[in-house]
Length: 176
Image (cartoon, rainbow, N blue to C red; front, side, top):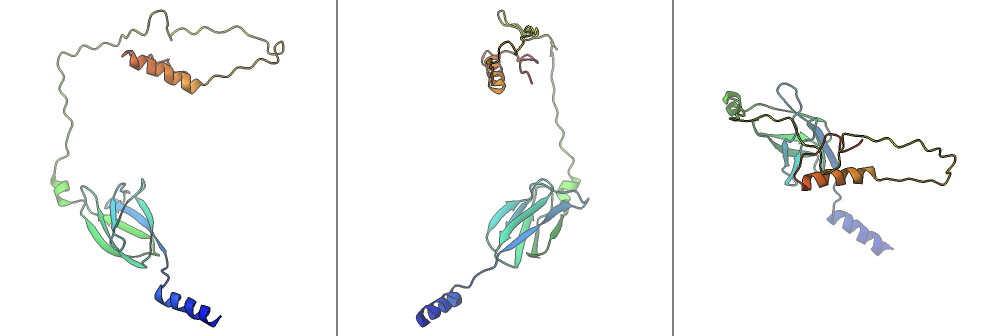
């Protein structure tokens, strides 16, 4: 028993247990708007993370204090030392290059474009513009009648057929 206690004590001394911390926070710009997709490099673990949709992030680390490097196109890179158990409010500044650079604009030039809003939605003898209603059937007369239809699969098949035929999909080809 004494050997077992000595062995366990030796293991605890040789292999110290590391605590785990959850480092979390948010990244915003100087206008206090959340920044999505900021690359966050954690120096201790050499891991790369990204901020979420609202600029928030959260990940585990085994260090109480850690160093982060944050980068995003159009913003100044930032490296800082943080305490893992505190909520981080990080602000990135717009880079000087981005502030002076004029925004790119999309230019499109089209000539001799004939607008045609008329599409032929008729294929052979089928159309989706006419809806033929079925007659009313009293279910009390036919208690064992059952009907099941996979509407999603049928709609997908209709759209796929039109695309394979290289034709325009009618606006009412899919019933919702």
